[in-house]
Amino acid sequence: MSSKRYTEEFRIAAVKQFTEGGHSVGDVARRLGVTTKSLSDWKEKCGESATACQEKKAELKRFRRSVTSYPVHYQAQPASIHQAP
Image 1 (cartoon, rainbow, N blue to C red):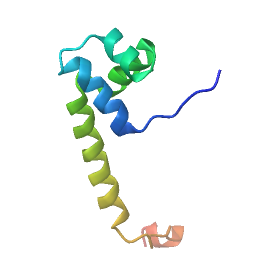
Image 2: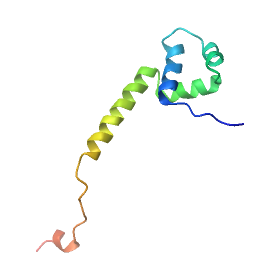
Image 3: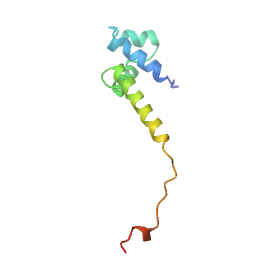
Image 4: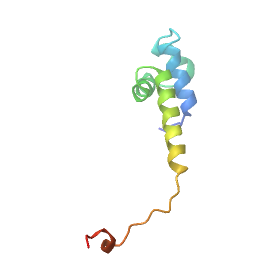
């Protein structure tokens, strides 16, 4: 059985259809051609709502951007510098 890869945007939109859109998991799965297990897994991964997932992803993206903006020229200093005179 081959496995398809779905984008995060697709997964979030799919989860929103049954968490916020009022549709059943089975209906959404049939309409999108995915399994109910996949939808449940996607919901679990994102937390209780798809909006929370989007917020977590945005926070992580901001964090990664802030970390990569720092200079990377830190090096370990020789042990002799850290010893008391």
